[in-house]
Image 1 (cartoon, helix red, strand yellow):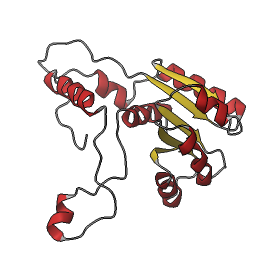
Image 2: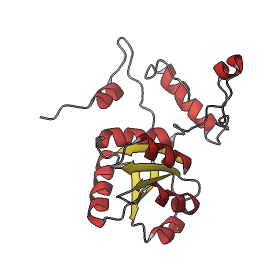
Image 3: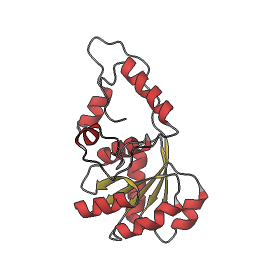
Length: 196
């Protein structure tokens, strides 16, 4: 018998002495999965669909990216680099406008992660990560998490050690995100939150 992951147990745990309330709606997303290897692409799409039934996955290869990207509007673009290197990400950013870019790669070196962030990636996952971790990370990116925006640091202001990174910009889904957080805090599902 397979035991539940730590993340799954934490998600399902109820605070002691707290009455059960309706769970918040699950996160839905339209995901464009880009991978040049058809078999692996289909296997990953099916695994994502099984782990995250609310996620709608569309698959495409690197050569067919343009028609797939223009066919629909996506919330997430999961790019499996499959040996292409981070230079391949330059093409995606312009084709999948508005979608949060997430990279899946065998290369987990700092240089590759920094290069992906330079191309606008909001998440970077090693292929060594488990599927549950990937799905939780995709959900985090979908609600607006992870970005290289630290320009509003109070420490930098006090010490004069400024930063070239931009101050985080407000997002259109900010009010909805904070309403969801308020519901989670009120029902006891979340007790603290940092950098939302």
